[in-house]
Length: 489
Image (cartoon, rainbow, N blue to C red):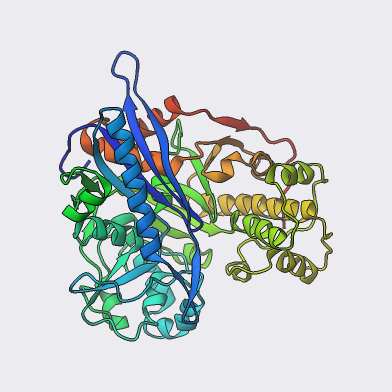
């Protein structure tokens, strides 16, 4: 545990994904006799999404930050009503994206979204000066066309600005302090996976200013306290600390995986699916690179050895398209109809970049099935079953490869996040992997966020195993045993 401890109290978790966000209050209760538990209370939810601006896909940061302030004000009001005090705030979001701020702290432009195509256009030029094999041996990062270094390579002018990853940009706007949290830094393609610092050779090769990013901070360290104007607007005390957590939302989610033993695999299932195992050291060999696995930092210096696999974005985009066509489909009914369909239906490659951008997803899925020589009926249930079968098969392939490359064998798969509520997906994953699947908690990211804050405050103690035991004591979990084992080619 690092960083200066702060007084106990309530802990506010700002947890923002690519499609929605929320501010939650976390509270640790109990003691040595009864055992401690952690609970969450949602005080504000809000939508999030990309906007088209000047021919590109961006995030509306001002609107996003305004929602954060609204949530923190609601948190302050909730705390005051119960006579409590919010001790600290932790922030986690998706990875990769950043905003550029000048010396005065002004944002140059709205941050680009990773769903914009600009990163793809820079890949070839980046690889001319940074050999992919050498790049992987340094960073251990999975190749994705939207990784931060490819986005930065499209910037015309970087003098006089600093790049702040989205959670760090929010923290800066709250405190005035510029830092880069380590778990998110590890997703940039500019982070040395062994040294745990910026990869200066890569900055030099790409012609990037050496101080383009602020100094690295670890989960549990304090970023700063609230600016006076932020305290006044939210009703929070000016001394309220903003504490670095696993600011990459997957890092916080994995910290809250309720595993009892070390031989576990995890799937953080939401807009994306992050599928992998937890290691002590990165795997940086050529086989790992060719398999496109990533080595990202986790809480307490662990390594999240995983792959980004397609996620429930496929399903949510289908629902959006059907609703726009006047055929709103309720998820529960869709899943029930999909579960009634037989196994062995057509599948798609859920990792295909063709599915990244928003568009008519059902048509793209049917086209991908046709390209594979099969036919997918027009019925929504058939499309949903195709998506979930494809995700489960991708999970099984990815986990098998992770075990092979890392040498770590697993006996149980933990699904956390929104996908843990999808009973059909959980059962199909158990069938595909041949392993027990433990589903929950849904709010793993917020729990991990809160627990890192609580540990920094001294409200809980111990390492990840103790934090995970606290999660097990606090939430309900559901297990799925394999019923039908199948393996996709």
